[in-house]
Length: 153
DNA sequence: GCCAACGTTGGC
DNA sequence: GCCAACGTTGGC
Image (cartoon, rainbow, N blue to C red; front, side, top):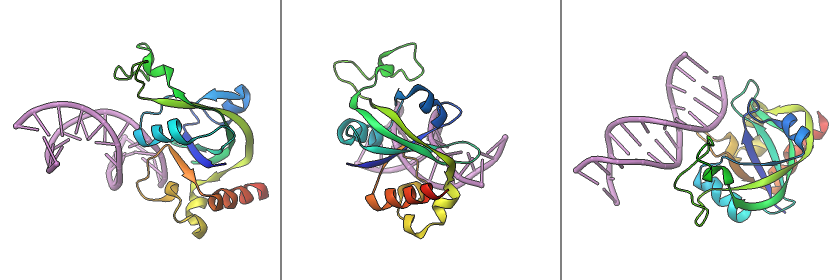
């Protein structure tokens, strides 16, 4: 089983929204590196941290599970959708998504500022300068380190 | 294939 | 709101 971190802006869709709906298609990813992970690597029952970006306290807000492995992102085919991409065709899809399922909501968001302070996480892509990847893999060690901390707060 | 211009991300 | 960092686009 693999571990991931996936970013979303809580003003658009946050951990409380996922808790409410239970399962959600993680659509709208328009980055090739992230696309490759969605399409080729993420497996059902993999776990992912839900990261809140572009908000007052950016950080990890909870845990979700991959509920359905990669399939073509239908929003790319819909000319009326904000995520429409005319270069993605149903017969040759450019963009993919997975469905995610709610697992847990942390009682407190684990702030990015705390993550940055941990020597154990120094090579986590999230805390590296200029990182903009909206989906990234986590090592077992990183996952368990963060998860242990989450259990304590 | 290079690279300048432009758009987006996302912390602060 | 600012701006650094990065990805993408398109002219050449």
